Amino acid sequence: MVNQLVANIKRTNAPIVVGLDPMMNYIPKTICNKVFAEMGETLEAAAEAVWQFNKGIIDMIYDLIPAVKPQIAMYEQFGIEGLKVFQKTCAYAKEKGLIVIGDVKRSDIGSTSAAYAVAHLGKVQIGSNRYSVFNEDFATVNPYFGTDGIAPFLDVCKEEKKGLFILVKTSNPSSGEFQDRLVDGRPLYEWVGEQVAKWGEECMGEEYSYIGAVVGATYPEMGKILRKLMPKTYILVPGYGAQGGKAKDLVHYFNSDGLGAIVNSSRGIIAAYKNEKYASFGEEHYADAARQAVVDMIEDINTARG
View 1 (cartoon, rainbow, N blue to C red):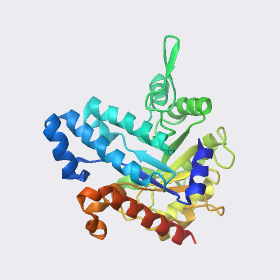
View 2 (view 1 turned 60 degrees about the vertical axis):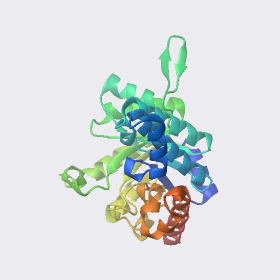
View 3 (view 1 turned 45 degrees about the vertical axis):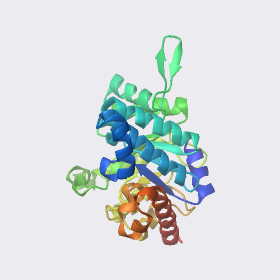
C-alpha cells in the first residue's frame, strides 16, 4: 500500500494527510441541531452528526489530498455507534480514492496483537468466510512490547500488502520522559528508529518500506537524525499547525527525492471555520473552510520544501 500512498502524493503534489478527529464542539450547530431534533440527544444522534460532518469534509477535499487519518478514540467515545461511523468513514474515504491511515496505536503480545492486526488491516475468519472489518490501509502501532507486539502486524502487512506507522518520537510535550532516555549512551527513540528500519526491510515496496514511523513535527532536530537512520521509511509527521510545528522545520523529514514524509493536520483543517483566518466562511460552509485550509497547508509545506 505504500506504493499507492506514494503515487497519491505524486499525483496531488500534496505530502499531507488530514486527521479526521471529530469532537462534538467541532461540528457546526446546524448539523447537531437537525440531528438532535430527529433522533434526540443520544449516542446514535452524536454518531450520525459525526458521520455527516466527516462526509462533508471528505466530499470537499478528497481531490486535493492523498490520505486521511481517522483517530479511533474520537469515535470510541460514542460507543458502538461511534465505531460504526469509524468503519463507515474509512470505507467512504477509500471509495473516494484516499489512503486510510487508522490512528489506533494498537499493540500487545501474541494472539492479542494478532487480533488487533486482523481487526484493522487483515481479514477475520468466520467459518469458510473471511471478512475485512475496519479495513484501513495503514495502522499506527506502539512498539513498547518489542518484536512480540510488532511481528503479528508484520505478518498481516505481508499478506495484505498493507502498512504500519510505528511510534518513534511523538509530538506531545511529555514524550521525552521515556523516548529521550539514554540507553547505552543514545536516546531510546534512536534505538526504536533503527529497529523500525530493520522491520521495514522485510516489507519493501518499490521505493519505500510498508513499515513507516511516526515522528513529531515539534522535534525537528530529532527528526533530522531519524531521517538519516531510516532512509527507506515513510515518516508520518503529526504536530504541524495547532501543536506548534512549522513547515520550515519539516524540510529534513523529506528525502532528496522530495518524498519520504507525510504531514498531518487535524483540527487545523476540519475545524478551520473556527479559526479567525477562515471565519468568513461561517459554520454552514465549514467544508469550504476546510478546503481552503488544505490549499493553504499544501502551499505552506511545498514552499518550505522548495
